[in-house]
Length: 210
Image 1: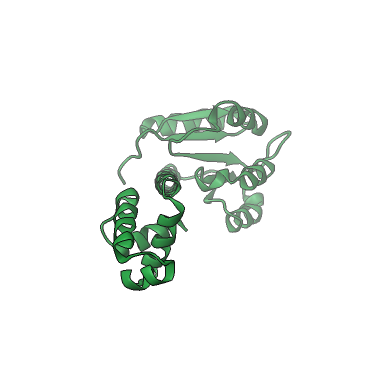
Image 2: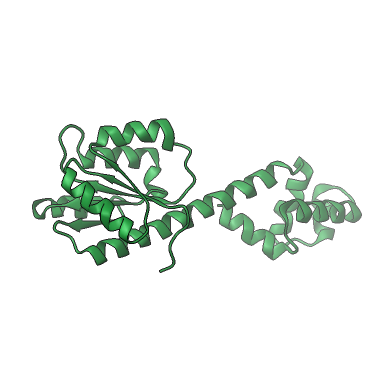
C-alpha cells in the first residue's frame, strides 16, 4: 500500500515501554507518530491543537488505563464525530477482547490483541490512515459543493431542482412562469457555478453531497 502523505499515528497508552516500542515500530516504517501517556493528555491535546487538523490520522488506544479509560475516550470521540476521520484501533489484552469487539461494532476501526504482530498491526494502521484520507477528501469535496450551492440565486436553485428531475426547459418555463430563454440562461449559470457540463453530472454531484 502506498504511504499516505502527511499522516500521523497517535498512540495513547499508559505503559512507557509499549509507547516506545510502538513509536519505534512506526519510525521503522516511516510512519510519523505522537505519543500520550493518558487519555486525559490526548484529549487536552485534541482540544488545544488538533481540533482543526485536516491531515489523515488514526489512533492506537489502550483499553485499560488509570483515570479515563480508553473506552471512555472512545465514547467521547464517538459523540464528537471525530472517529469518522480518526479511525481508532484498540490495543487490548486477552481479557478485553469481547469489549474491543463491541467497540468495533460501535464504530472502532479494529482491535489488536497484545502481544501483537508488528506486520499485522502496521497493515491495519496503513488501512486506517487510507480511510482517514478518503473521508477527509470526501468532506473537503462536500464543503466545496456546499460553497457552490450558496452562490446560486433562489431562481437558479429552482431551475436546478427541476433540471435534476429531468424536466425539459419548456416545461420548466411553464412551471416557473418564465420564458424558455430565461430558463436556458439560468441553466447555463447553474452549470457554470456548479462546475458541471450536464444534468447527469449535476445530479451525481448533488447525490454525493447528500
